[in-house]
Amino acid sequence: MKEVRAKARELMKGFCRVCPVCDGRACAGEVPGMGGLGTASSFQDNVRALAEIKLNMRCLHQALEPDLSLSLLGFKLAMPVLAAPISGVSFNMGGGMPEEAYVLAKLTACAEAGTLGCTGDGVPDFIHESGFAAIKALDGRGIPFIKPWEDEELFAKLDKALAAGAKVVGMDVDAAGLVTLRKMGRPVSPKPAAKLVEVIRRTPAKFVIKGVMTPDEAKLCVDAGAAGIVVSNHGGRVLDGTPGTVRVLGEVAGAVRGQVAVLADGGVRSGTDVLKMLALGADAVLIGRPFSVAVLGGGKEGAAQYLEKIRQELVQAMVLTGTASAKEVQPTVFWNT
Ligand SMILES: Cc1cc2nc3c(=O)[nH]c(=O)nc-3n(C[C@H](O)[C@H](O)[C@H](O)COP(=O)(O)O)c2cc1C
Image (tube, rainbow, N blue to C red; front, side, top):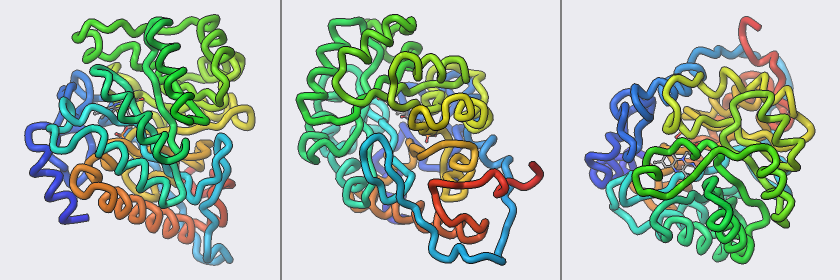
């Protein structure tokens, strides 16, 4: 990973410093870029809130070979870690790699490791087109996230995603606040409940809503027919001043657990971070920026190495907390609760 990170630092110069810990401090306000919006308090709190949680160490048990596998949204996964949708290599990452090669490398590494990568959307069109092409090449093993556009563009893109073979599709509703899109004159907007119902009903695939931060909106997603939610503040890129996602995860997951798949992202940097999110009720987590750094620095191999590092850390965290299965992580792993 050292070489991969060094190469990424060179290629991402001016866009990402590839810090020892990716915590949103050095890149505050750099949107476009890899940073968080404004003071980046939302991005920084994602990382800080996870670091504040402490774990109980337990070594007197039988959990020697923990089971990381799970079923999620119709996919069998070897581990509860997915690559988050991060798009825009040219304007967010320094353009060191064509968008198409980046997204294909990321999704292929995930597929080969038995998990899933997600793809993003934006302007120009080659962003979503590159994602759909990768999903097609991998026989539908990937989740495309489409922005909350006005009807015509939204429906056209959803149809294209399905035609590419996507079995699960998503909408990052929090992109309603993306300054980058507003600057480009492309309208995205919040969606009232009735619109969500209409969009989900007309889509013959499992539908995931990304950008849920409150229990009431999580329940609204269930009522609208969603198959999954992602507890996310878009990596702190849309609203300054939100709590770290892990602070709201327990309550949000508690409101809908068992009714939809619950995913979560924001500031996950290690296997112990993954375990913390699972213990708070997530079925699986998404990792964003560090994945992009790994792909830029090492292509498919870099992403594969990064995933393996996280997998090993998760195994270690599970063994040392006495956790036998990623499907049933108990809150007793938390110290002081
Ligand atoms: C440069 C950049 C581009 C992103 N593009 C998208 C996107 O196209 N679609 C989307 O749903 N989320 C997008 N996100 C948000 C990520 O999917 C994810 O929610 C966030 O990065 C997770 O936090 P982390 O990077 O701290 O792990 C983007 C984030 C970054 C940093």
